[in-house]
Image (cartoon, rainbow, N blue to C red; front, side):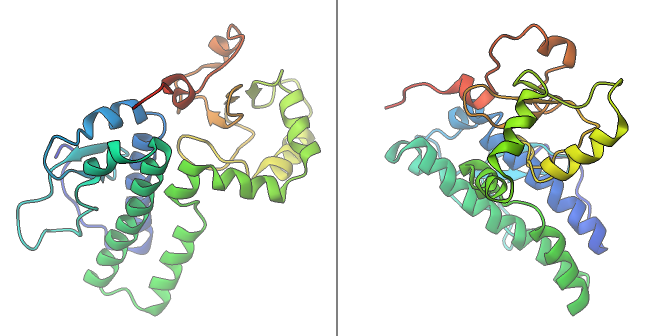
Length: 242
């Protein structure tokens, strides 16, 4: 596996950073890189697993050969169910197992390095503040945001930036940044699952209406100005499958 050198996080903050990196990689596999992930999960191959790495990379590979493995292993054989169910249901299933694996790895480190009750509680609370992979993949995280924010708030968020581009122009009053943070602080990037921030460039998909960091979908402000209708990677990759 090419996820970089092995290391063992020993503090709550290090374990949480490890968790976030692995989570980001797996979210990429199931969202922005979904076409590549789908192709790699060939049902004709042997039992395959989806791995996330601390450096935000992902990999589909065979399980570790050593017994017992150095770390808890992800769900085995995710490729076998690919063609036997709807793609969105299959991706949701992989997402659920990915969430379970991330928790297993995080608390494996906690047990190995002797986290006490307070440390375990703090680690869980830090993890619990992030949407699960399942919530990001299924759009449940976005639905939760909509329940917290009024429709008018989201409408103003779109209209202020030509229904496409987020982030504040330099010549706007600083007070608007604070209002924007309050109204849209719960908006999540459809790629990495992180929260909205007014000092970052965002772009909205005109098909699924999800918001994305420009850096997550490789779109710059200058490029966005020339896009009449933006489609996120997931919407661009959608095609009929048997």
